[in-house]
Amino acid sequence: MKAFLVLAAVVFTGCHANIFYADEPKPQLEQLSDAFWDYVAQATRTSADVASQYATTLQNQMSPLAKDVMAKITQEAEVLKDRLAKDLTTVKDQLEPYAENLKTQVQQRLEELKESMGPYAESLDSETLKATLLQKSEELKGSLEKSVKELQSQLGPYSDEINTH
Image: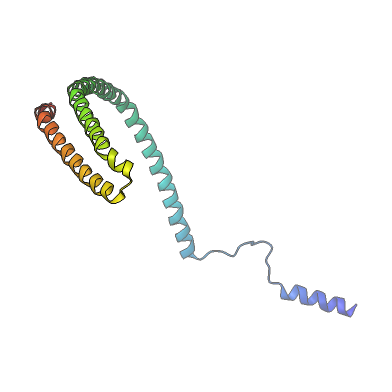
């Protein structure tokens, strides 16, 4: 029983808890700091509300203008699309004969190369075949470069015309 009384006395005397005040009163500096941060939070909420209202008003006023601008842009895009399609068709029609001519020349040169390589391929003389093949490929390359330059000179007026549009 003595132990119980000693234990009870230690518990009651060692505990400084006040059941009426759950939190210790804050110093004035902390109260001032809390009030400041509450004010900042309130101002942030208010500014967000004002910004939201401004954005809604601006959106309502700009919607008709934006629709008009989008209609004009869409109309101009369609006009440009039609014009570009016409120009591309014209260019294609003008380039087609030149492309066919170039294709025919390349095929003709390749046939000539095959014919000139035939005897070497049959004799299986690899060194002569290699030398002749290199020579003929250089001739073919030169011929192609010449044809491309001719094509470019023939297309010069057309490219100038397209650039002016």
